[in-house]
Structures are given as C-alpha cells and as structure tokens.
Image: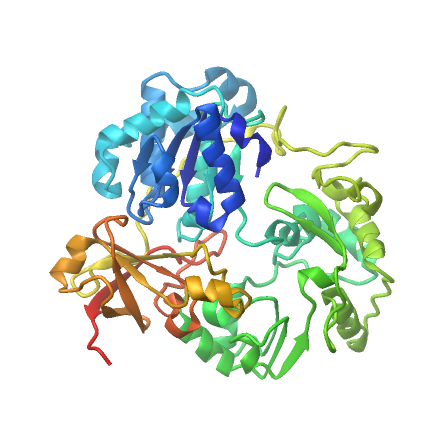
Length: 529
C-alpha cells in the first residue's frame, strides 16, 4: 500500500475494484464503511458480484471478469475529455503522458460498455466521482492481479492515480490489500525468484556482489522459477524435488489435476507446515513447523507496517520454528547458518535491506514502523512518494484491453470467478479445523444468477456439477441476484469440491500470476444421490 489503513477515513472518494473487502479484509472493510458513514466519502465498487460493500456504495459497476483495463481506460478517457486531470501533478511529477494519452480517445464509455457490461453513464459517473475528489484512494486485491492481464490492470490503476494527482498525500494512493498475513514481509525479504531483500534485483551485479560478500558464496545471476514454472518443470521432469513451506498448492493452485500429475513425477517432496494438509499428505518428508503464536520475529502487514511478535506458547511435540528448521537443513547440506536468534537475523536484515535499515527490535517493542525507515530515528513512512517516485518521475504506461485467455462459448457458456468466504480462509487448513467456523460454512457452493439458473432448470439448493476444460466438481447451487448474468462464483477453500480443479493456469507474461479469476465453465443439475 502506498498509504496506511488509518488514513482511508480521510479519503473523499474510495474506488474498490477486484476486492470483496468486508469478506477478505474485514478490518479494512470496516475502515471503508466508516469513511462513508461518518466522513461522507463517496464509494465506487467495481465487481461482478453485488458484494456486501455495495450496500454502502454510491455506485456499483458490475463488470465482467477480466475487463478491468477496458473499464479503467474508459474512466480515464472521461477524465481527460472533461478536464478533470491534475495537470500540475502530471507536469511536475510524471513522464510518458503524451504516449499514454494518445491511446485514450478511442476508449470511450460507449466502447467499454459492451465489453465490460457496465452502462456508459455509470462509467462516466464513476470517473467524475473519483476525479472530482481532492483525495481519492484506490483499493484492490486479487480480483485485479489474478488475470493474464494482471500487470496491465495494476499499471492502469497507477495511471488513474497519477492522472488525478492521487499519490503522495493522505486519503489517496494505490493500495493493494495483501491476501495473507505476511505476504508483504515475505516479498520484502526476497521470497520471490527475481529479487533479494527490498526488491534488489538478482540480475543486478552490484546487488549480487553485496549479498555474496555478506554470505560468503557465489550467487547465480539468473532469476529462479515462479511457482507455476516449478509445477511445469516437475511435470516435464526438469524439476526433481520440491520443498513446500506453509502452502497447500493441491487446493490453491490453478488446474489442480495438472498440479497433482506434476507432483506424481517428483523424486522427492518435502512439506513444512503446522498441519497435515492435502499437499503434506503426499510428501516424502513432513517437517512439523510452529504456528504464529509459537514464534519470535516480525510480521510486515499489508500497509508495510513491521510489527514485533513474541512467543505465546511453546511449539508442540517435535515442531520447530521455521528459521531453525531451515538453518538445520542448510547445515546438513554443507552451509552453516550460524544465527543464534531472530534478533541476530534481524540485524542481518538491517545491514542488507535499505528500507529496513533503522527498524530494530528495540524500536518495535513500543510501536510498529512502516518502511522505509532508513535514517537514525526515522519515524517510518506511512505514505510513499510524497515528493518523488522511486524512479524519480512516475511513468505513465499505455495499456490496451486484452480479453481473458478463455472466454465463454457454446460448450462452456458461463464465466467462473473464484474468491473467499468470510468464515473460511485460503485452503482451510486452519479454519476447517475450527468447529464454529465449519458450522457456519461447512461446504462449497456455486452462486448463479436466477436467469441462468432458470434456463438450466436449476433451483436454489440443487446439487450441480460444474465443468471446465480441465475438470469437473460437484457443488450446491445458490441462486442469487447478487451475481450478474453469465457469471458464476465459487469459493476455493474446499478440497472436496475444489474450485481450482476448474481454473485456468494461463499466466500473466510479466508477473507470471495465473488467471484464477476468469475461466469458461458449464453448469448442470446433478441427480440426487
């Protein structure tokens, strides 16, 4: 997030796109509702489902899955045409504007309406609400990123924020809401195939030399594999072993049938986790790990706030904290990791990671700190890019609409999109062991519009099958007007009815993120019993 969760209440307009915020991020959802109800913020929600946040919104844009760029370009066409752009910000803080602007005249709301399914008048109204505010914030999640056009979607949102000068001030910004509790921290620490810590590039000789000196080893100059590339490598026989930590790809990855077959080709699978998940049950070796309550260290949350965590109880049985397992394994492979504690690891992080340079355990005992925190006594940076961008000037990126890789046809006439339930989390490895939560949401369901259900002879509560080109799952119909015609929705938490048996493993060419939010399916009533 460029801004903090706290200053969302200062926004005069909030644009939520690709995020079922009150379900996936309830605390932030509460902040958004507070901004609307107590501070008069105008709320725009773009989502193919009538999510709970729509109830307090000024405008709902029920776009078709995978049409985000068309919607955003049309909004920006209106902003330019009606003189709502922040010309002073554009001239003083950005570059590439002319090439970007040349793309927009053809992207009218009338052009976008048949693509997105959103009426042209509503696109115009959304543009005016967002651009007419002095402070406008954008919030998005995986409804934006989990597309083959995910990078373009994010670039288009950055364009929108720069076009209106909504960067570098309170109540504004571009705010991706992270999907798990330490995703931001994991990325900051280099848990990506192309970066060391703080996004220092693996193929940068200067960055590489710094880490080689610190670790006393020669490091490869080529980036590693993404998760999807590892799975493909396993299927092809070029990846022979996998070490999986705290992840359950046999529920959460797209096209699970392909993932299952790839895992069958491995020579060796190691899983480090706190429960025997669907993935761990297939492992050659399971390393029992410690939960969040059994660890010392730090977590970095969605707003870049680094927070200290302390052991609340000892790990059970033979379970160990992650860093001790990793260090022991490294030592057994011939590279001793001689850290004595998490405090010692934090000192190494500070030495090698510019944005964490002044974040110490001592400071974190009293308050969490937003990175960057680079100088002595620096209070942290709740708002990024207040004076300049990391690259100096912000770069406008002309992005053109590209449809989803797989669109509906006569054989598979509906678009499936996936997401979360309020009562379950991710692959359910923790929440489905909680009796109270399991009672609230014990099984998978399929949301389908009444018009589509009527044509298929499906009633609310009927048993149904959902099929794609990759697999078939059984579910229960939930007939509801909260989802637009032509689109169906399933949560992905349930291994016994895994939505990701159906989803498409096509990826964004830049970020390599799979297109989990749009694939073609057919639905049929299933005979009872």
